[in-house]
Length: 487
Image (cartoon, rainbow, N blue to C red; front, side, top):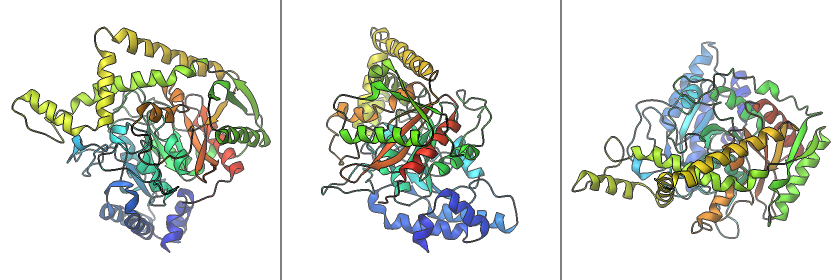
């Protein structure tokens, strides 16, 4: 029974629970056993089987009493370890948060819990969400369930690599992720699942450990576009505790999945055809254009002229905000404390031992660009370029309804392959960073296989708060691609 239950989609599992085909306890137990069998993937930092079975039993009790079931009642999901969870260790993948057990729940996980979702555990991730491969985690690298290839284990993408691996390997029906510059969409592409970054402000950031506050956004990672619509409907909503949360009604995202994209205008940005881009990435992109045209959409070329500056802009703004956000980790209030002869020594020792190499690199970059004499030359200039990038998208959407691009410039690479070259590693986000800087919704849909037999994703970018059109188009793309390969 366990294998079929773990391979269900959220939608099918929801229907099965409603019709009494199985209980939430049975569904959850199947996933507990799957996690135990797949510990070699290192997808979880903290497993919570007892808590999961307890919440599953509560869900079954509600159904037995004919109580109204929540929109995700009884469905097992993984929670990225960036979300604070009351009474459960939360580390953000970092040594400096050793032993931190929050006395409160993040708004997104509280909403999911209120909707009946069952937390299977805290998914592994790049430390403080800084990475594109899930190799910077203090708790070790996550292995892509699609590997190994050529005798080497593969990265699942990052920073939401544990979430992606959990969904792809059928250890949870879905997972939460966060996306700062591509950390939902890129691992979704590498792992062969669907990853949706909502519009900045659509989901609350309260209770999510901050990386770059003007960029971070929570979103769902699922097996299908339909599942992403289900989960986003629960995660989204205004939160007065988050000053960046937008007070807008949450649409019925499931109802948007009509399958009809007749007359829709799909923009194809000419600047995304990069020099040296792999032929298979370009071929899949052209195939995606053909699929959408066959479904009734019209494709038009659009221009995003400041795209070439997006990556450099991102790697000034994001580290600057990280430098500020991570100043709170000093060994005084929570987490790791490494003693020293003086208070300054204690600060230095704690931060030096508690932060990994990539986090230290970004904090140093961020501190530098914010320092006197360099603020205007770097940070202020980057903010101006960011405004130009956002304006490019605004103008492009005057001529189209949604934009189609590749998600990532390659398929999954081997663990350790690029870790000594940060610039090459940062290039993994070249297609996802521009929409993050503009705060736009974006989704990655698995659309094909590379020559090595590994998943490749296509990305759709939409207007602000128009996740409905993004999901509707993604549903049509998903149906045309017919991606069904499993790890």
